[in-house]
Image (cartoon, helix red, strand yellow):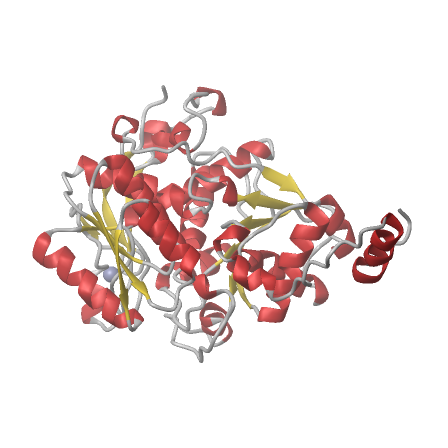
Length: 423
Ligand SMILES: [Zn+2]
């Protein structure tokens, strides 16, 4: 077992104040007084890991907890369902079509609850147990809630979820199936206010954010996303890709993955770090970069099929990941999203949730603008599986035709309905 990094405290991403508070979930108090809401981030002292060689990483357990040396909770406290160790899939056919022969997908739908939120929740709920929490809570439109419910069940703790009435039935089913007490709120703001009361009055442990304007989620949980960078680096022979694209709303994943790359570079395990790209329906981070803003401002919203990430607000942590990596935000339309979802399913055999397909939509958008170098290694993070929201996919699929009784009739249907001629 390698030694572990030491947790120094929680550090503000803006003013760099470090606080020693295991329940620093509401962001930086000092920056809030200046009118800016900013998340805290776990500050690690990496010096115990100086000179770490990849061979020193334990081969078991497989997955996320292999990298416990850079996580803020010891593996002995791990509340785990075997998350992580997801495949890096070379998208050869699609990459060839887009003129990007080194296009890869990090398929996070293979996690225990079929989304990358499991990386956040395993670490956050482990931290909750290690710090004596009695109740887990979250506000979520689906994936994050389902994952929190599963890990709370695994830890044997009750879980209270504040969701929205408008989320798909599949998501409500999942959250309740894992035993969570789910209540539906009328607005985003109302659910955060109610959740906040549970945290402040009763000491409930949150896995998501609850601050307005939003800052992002539990800083300990965000550390779990760093392992995506570690796994990609390992699969590429301890090298970083040139570009990593992540579907983003409050940018827990975007920032966590970026932090992983920064630490890998600090440890000398990779030479370079990738540009981080945020795929976002309404573009608050793109807007902030284009206008040179210090903090993201609310942009015009609307409706989006990618409801999991459809936020007109961005966060400081997301903007920090883009600025520090020389990255960009790319706005996503429903039409572009469905094109990417179709391409992943039909050309590569990967069925992902609409919001998850946005990372490929961003690549398609940048490729059409000739903004990507064909020599570059590009990784799109596919955050969640398509069965989370099958109704959205049904809208672009044809009805299933009835099979005629005779085989020649079947061939005719295959030709006419599906365009299959050379069978
Ligand atoms: Zn601050």
